[in-house]
Length: 465
Ligand SMILES: Nc1ncnc2c1ncn2[C@@H]1O[C@H](COP(=O)(O)OP(=O)(O)OP(=O)(O)O)[C@@H](O)[C@H]1O
Ligand SMILES: [Mg+2]
Image (cartoon, rainbow, N blue to C red; front, side, top):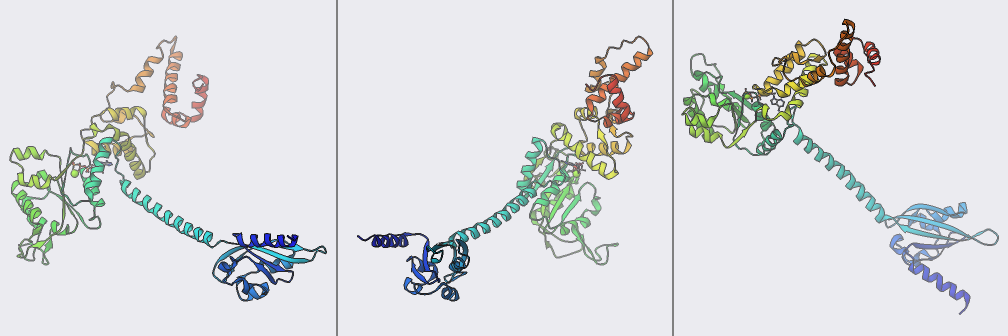
């Protein structure tokens, strides 16, 4: 076979099998040959392409811009992105073929369809944006779930309670909070409301122990105009009516006298009430949350609390444990309240390590409320920046103040003269300060001397080594 024929066969094989689209033009940009797959990206058959110049094809918008034109102009290999008549995006690379005189006799271009790739890139981008959106949404939901609004829940006991609260908040079930005074029953009752579907509606708090018996009905049910002497002219809605669509919180429900318990039970059961002096009963939609520091079951036994009301309320009982049973909350509560009152009174108080020890040892009969009140009092009444244990109302001179005691033993009380005795005392104080504080400024504050004196004395006695 003639050499030329073999070349022709080789070229044809390349054109037919190449994945890229190949177009060959002469030195004037007229198409001589093309791979058959060009039709898929240019929309023209080979016969339609051949014989046309790249100029013609560009004018027909078969592709633009023409890479061959640039090669002819710039006489070097060029790469461009093209858009084609069929709406595809193509990466075209073209190179010149020179003759012996350096004239371009051919331009060969290879085009690679990037439409799919671009599509994938766009889809990917779209997905990425969506992902970002979902991620922020998830974060928001998580934050919301963990959003405890200044409620300390460090201990295992309280995180269990909190989990239960989150679960029941989603239902409309009646909840009764049990626990000693000051453990946070009101705080958690409100938290349930805030986390429930009723959060946008009213949270009406009824202090059952504080409403006088004679006013109970008019307060709870409201009254129509002229219902009794002294009744306002327009009439007035009661607390239950105000709780419509929201939550009715029956605080201190154990304080309610028996006859009022019966009236309360009736509205809770029927979700219907009539204003004093009114005739039309109204349908009211409210969720009941109750709370008490009394032992309701015991009161039922003693005949002081209606059994039927007890069972009405006792659907989901949640007991908040007293503070002495959840010491793990103490430290964080101290920090929380200290921060709160430091902000409020624009102070910068800190608790001495021994003060913290004594707080942890105390039994806290008044629970969180007692701790909160104590922190406020300490912030207001102490003079130094550091709050010493002696400021605690339950501080006992000989209680096991760990840090103090250790030190008393450390330095033997032997001195030749007064000078030496005084030095011993000074060393003891310095060592104590050195152990308890991180900076010489804090030590100075504690010792009541200047910071430079602290530095000097530490060096003098070699304490900082
Ligand atoms: N976990 C907590 N984190 C932060 N503050 C709390 C927490 N629990 C209670 N408190 C605070 O302690 C104080 C007492 O709480 P609350 O009034 O809810 O107690 P209570 O159980 O309803 O008491 P009582 O039985 O006397 O009505 C409130 O000022 C409250 O903000
Ligand atoms: Mg309360």
